[in-house]
Amino acid sequence: MTDLFRLLGGILFLTVAALSLVPASAPVMWGASIAATEWGYWLAIAALLPLIPSRSRARIGKIGALCSVGAIGLFIFPVAKAKEVNDVLPSTFDAQFGTARRAHTRFSEAPRPSPLVFPDLIKPLNLPPVRYEQRTFGAYEGQELTLDIYRPAYVHGPLPAVIVVHGGNWQTGNNTEFVALNAYLAGRDYVVAAINYRLAPRWPFPAGRDDVLSAVAYLKVYGPQIGVDTNQITLLGRSSGGQLALLAGYTAMDRSIRGVISIYGPSDLTFEYQHPAPKNLLDTRGVLEGYLGGSPTRVEDAYFSASPVNFVTAASPPTLIIHGMRDSTVWVEESARLDERLREANVKHLFVQLPWATHGCDKSFGGPCGQIVNYAVERFLDGVTTAPATQPPDRTAAKAKKVGARRAKLSARPRPQSARGQHIS
Image (cartoon, rainbow, N blue to C red; front, side, top):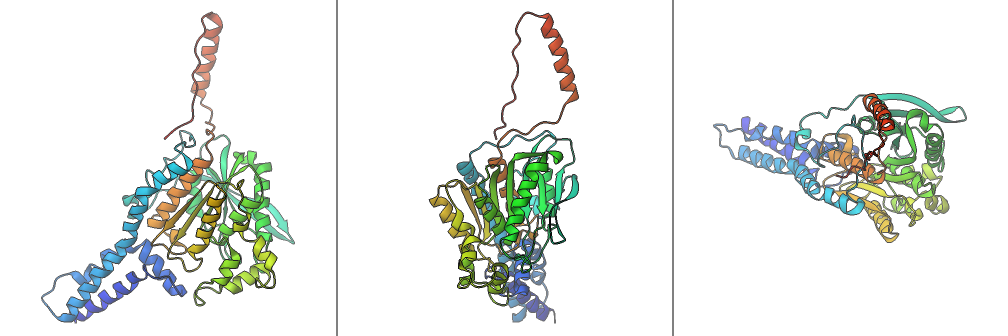
């Protein structure tokens, strides 16, 4: 009986682990794939059970043990691949965006030391305390559009803003999707505005894009009330929110938009219609028809107008693209096409490909994908918002300055003044 359990356990672990190698074709497979790739190192420990020695030497027990050995290797595969990304990503950022980093206030949380921090795989990340408030930035036919503000708990001057756009196939979801990342960024000298927008099919394109632009306009007017530097706004979107962020950033022609971040977002909707996800996983064509009002043959202009790839110019804001190569919901080829267009237009950008990852891989904030996403987002923001951060008032320093001024009046000798330069890492 022990050998039978050993066999069944080994086969089960190997089956789950194998999902890290194949694109998901159904929701159950997709969920299991995220578990295998982002929490696989925990499953690898469980897979040791069929390897525990026993007195029995039955053949089926040995087969189960071999299956477990294979499963452990596959469970560790994402971490090994993440280590490869870890080794090259910092230098790639430096080459593309330079080594200059935005100066942070002395109360800010320290930046991530590297894309992959192994202790963070097994311990929860401590998020800093932040201030939170909700505001309404628009209303349509009785539907209020709200944004949730996350900002540092300490006193601060004007800080760059990050507008976060949730996913959900343009039809579902809300602005609570990114709560952990919102708090993470707020503790590092950013004001985060996570927005709700009008959803299809009641509100088809371009309603969602217009709502993102309305949120930008709102922050430019009311941002100073909540400590926003209105000249430094970045758009960040996940999945369909990535499409909205890209499209708003590329079509606004607004110099206050310093950058755009797309995390596995679609960028060429005609291509997506022609290359849908597996039918059992997502009805891609039905989703697009609900969002855009029909098929490409019926509403060709809508597909063109909703595709960010068609609006890339030399004046487009710097862009960060993150996409898993095992993603079967939004194929990585879409991001590759956007990467090529940005390169042709000579737009400063970076395309981060995650060889093991699937759609929604950042659900695990401390997993391999989650850690690299956090690092890439933070490093990109620091690279495109390079103006020094305004330090909060220091009463001791202010008092010392007044005393120095009095002494200066009594002395005829000129005294050199110190200057605070931009932090370089």
